[in-house]
Length: 316
Image 1: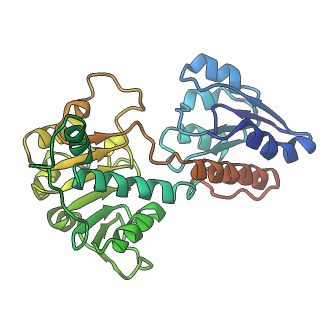
Image 2 (image 1 turned 90 degrees about the horizontal axis):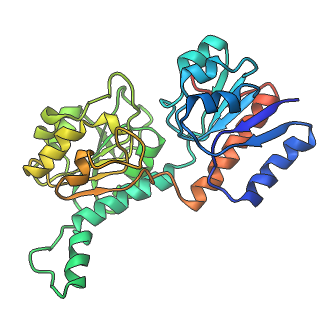
Image 3 (image 1 turned 90 degrees about the vertical axis):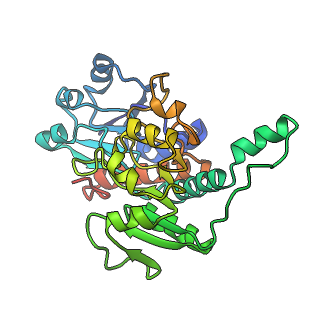
């Protein structure tokens, strides 16, 4: 029988967690849960006897994986996997699965919400209302007939495209490879064309060697001065200092940022906290009641598949 260690909360109730564990416990498998930590000696102590680890977006360095002699499976309750030491997992022959798909709707809706908030200047108009003012000088703009550029045409990018299309937008997209199965209303173009033509640029790409620092001062200068940038992908895809400078100098009109170079809480040195017209959220795009429940369903389905000898949602 296998020992399964949950290294952080899955964001569901204790009742739901107990119900999802019950079928496995009836088979003789055991579960141990710990609060989230980034302390490596603590992680090693908690994980060293595990056959399987479950975690969301907390870092799991390679040195922790290397110290786990019994480890055979890592079940990542997240779409991105760059926070896990995959090289160490591969070297030890550890199977890794993720929960891709659980937050497609949640992330796409936050993108739309951020865009609408910035376009209609909701933060500023709310403050104006609370201080006895009027709308003067704070009139916004509509999404209809605007051009949306999506960098990264995976499942989340496609759902985002569908939502913007419902608002009457033209949708451009750019990915590392051409997607022959992309929706017919999505126009696949070069990244340069996308940046130059889009009223809103949305980042949905993974973090890897080719995307790290991809949106820098040079790329931001290609965008319209009236354009918005929305990043719900990974923080290091954008050079934060370059974006803050572009916002403060009016190179682009605004930004919605849900991800940063490090996971929140952020300290005062984060430049985007002090940039003009920058809507910031502490990595919440994926987090809704519905997505957390779906994530747990996928995670325990992955565990069941691995225990049955037919692992799924594999991370290569």
